[in-house]
Image (cartoon, rainbow, N blue to C red):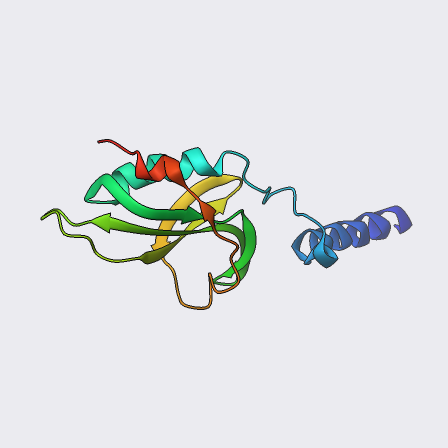
Length: 130
């Protein structure tokens, strides 16, 4: 009987620990993305109506962001892309959201999401072809 009680209690502890914040420790189910630049480039080819002749492209390093109710790695992206008609839309910011180390979605950034991002030049995006 004592062995059964100990097993049940240890199962509860493990379940609770796996859902905690881990006090800032990295969650192995949510690793930092390593190939984020190439993942973003591949997604831009699909996401943008006209991925050619992008201007002023810059990207941040992956950082933890609150997305809904979870912390996910996100990469901020700033660029000036062209519409189908050929006109430029002006500088716009996006967030690439990563789940389990892989790019899951690209969304328009909210003002506060990329406010502290450290943008670096992203010349690979400016050289995209269809």
